[in-house]
Amino acid sequence: MAAKKKIPNPIDVHVGSRVRLQRTLVKMSQEKLGEALGVTFQQVQKYEKGTNRIGASRMQQIAETLGVSISFFFEGAPGSEDSTGGVGMREADTANYVTDFLSTSEGIELNSAFVRIPNAAVRRKIIDLVRILADETGDSSA
Image (cartoon, rainbow, N blue to C red):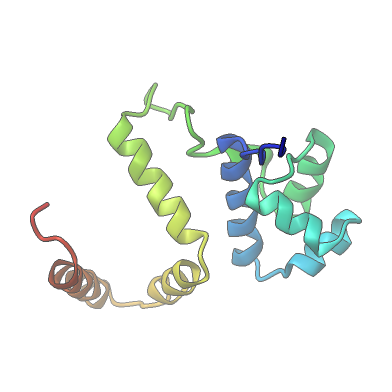
């Protein structure tokens, strides 16, 4: 009888994606983070995928190394509440979608470039352009 493959806990996946997001934002490689933590880059990969759970002391090390509070890793986590007392399903899905996008290299690169545009009118036109392009290539029945 073959062993079942263990599915990562959604919280572990979320925390790992937030580690990856912050690591990428501070332009740190998995190797450098691993060195700071005393683990291999493969272990960092497992943390970021949620395959391996991050213990409390290791999470404190990661937070200090990446310059964030531990609570940063749990922002927008599945089942968490926001400052207004709760998150509706639609808002939670949107928050996860944004977090997932910002965890990609494309999301980080796009966001980084976008915030460097000094002219608000130009930023607004870029948003309009992206909306138009999305309607042309996606399902416009939404």
